[in-house]
Image (cartoon, rainbow, N blue to C red):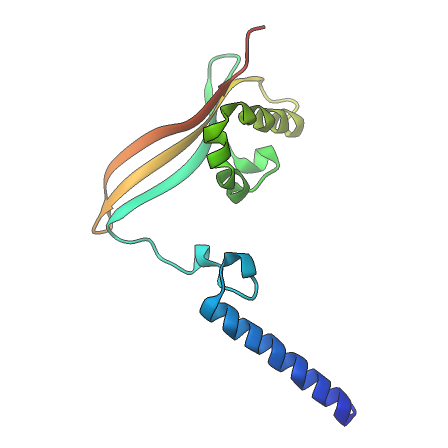
Length: 143
């Protein structure tokens, strides 16, 4: 390799390293991979609350089922990121039902869909109470 090539490679390496260093010090999640991805860089406090979201549905037979996000063709973070929108406009949940029916054509028809938060309160790392809250609900209109 020529001296010029080594210089260009060294400058590019220095630029990437400086960007990573600056991102680690001042970056936000939006700067990933040059900034920290905080979702994986923190621990849960041993006293406080932990909230986990899930999607529940009611079939035409009246059975309540939990729907894995993958069965909607989405990742959990994609669904959780939309929770404020679902809270403001629960009718948007019909799009999740449509996705479910598209990805699971042989599954039972859904007549209701709910986004539910399971909230666990911790004291010194032990669960002291558990609460379930419906964040948003959508029901299919009559026949």
